[in-house]
Length: 285
Length: 295
Image (cartoon, rainbow over all chains, first blue to last red):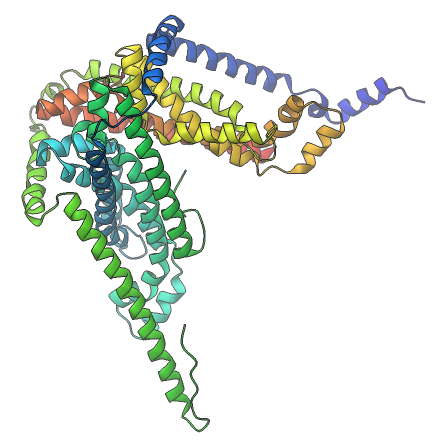
């Protein structure tokens, strides 16, 4: 007759890591947690965050929240709606422009279409640079290039999206099935015929679905472009916040939320129709 | 789809195939034309709304080119280091501001993840305590996700004053909204078997989540968190536009004042910072995922 303690001892001898974790791993993990917490505290201290400031600000936030109710438009609702339509136009044209630029770049950047290392590498690095700079920064730059207004916003969205879309498009072209291309070539087709007849039908649904996904994301980013003067509803939003007209701010936010939700819904529905599934392949998060 | 093709039995097989092909082609062409027509109408309407004209493109694109070329510093091989030194004349301050930017993203991501983690359980259909909890958590996360960070930042700058606190809170709230939803979706995919095991052993609700759910979902959570951190570094670089800390305020100043050389210098440093953060985060992600597979 063995006691429970004996059996536990036997099991832990046979499988050392099963009952008691490896002490080195355990302490390593604990040390990592302690280091993480210390880093968090130090970073907060370095940035000048303090619970005191948080609580004093919190009362101000409460005042804002109370003044937001009820939301009012003060007779500006037509201007707000026009600005909202302008926002959608910026997002739409930006996406269209980015997609049109990304199609040739996608083929150019695909290793199986243009087997030149220099072009491939150079294009990818340029796209990395374009992508590494936020849309709002591009918007600010375009405002000083082409002046205030929605055109700057369209160009900013188009440029930033090209950085991402061209990369996704190129990957889609690289992932296309080669057999179809071999078929076209064996029937006497040229390189252009391969691109048009073998690769294009395979990648078009991927292109379309990603562009729709980006239209969705761009609608969100276009709502704030007006903060730097690049058109859309963001101008009114920033302006009303500047003059502390909190009930107008609430009204504008309440206009934006359902619009964004509706565009999300529409884009998801179109994506599903376009390729028969929900998520955009190749797009993260 | 093609309409019913009913050839005479005596018809040549080639004729049948050709007729079908013609029908298919016609349908396809009609679909494509419809698609293009809708697209053209939408482009025309939004072009009108967005005040776009060819003239603007023709004028704007070359001006962008000259803008970019004006930002590039004069560099000659003889005086390379002196030129670079003059270009990066405030390099130390800029690196400091970029460091602050990364710290803002770090603190905000941490706060957002912690809040999103706790909200992801009531927001998961299989773990929610009840319909009320579920709907409340979902709607709250949705609101936090849909309001843009910059709007939160503007509100918080008013409440908390200029500085990093406003930016940290704005990004943290948005992160909570995004990650809370993603986490809840991961929670909904876990296997019921392990939950049943923990419940059968007599665990309370908290213990079920602690012992049955968390070990399964943690690697995916960490992976998403690191991805979000990369995105937040980019967001942190622009919240300074409204005075909420980081490199943004300096960047806005040099762009608005047309200090061309400084624009390219700061953007270069920013791109390097973003690339470094991406590389480090990807390394950590791979290590965690590999470690998970070995277990």
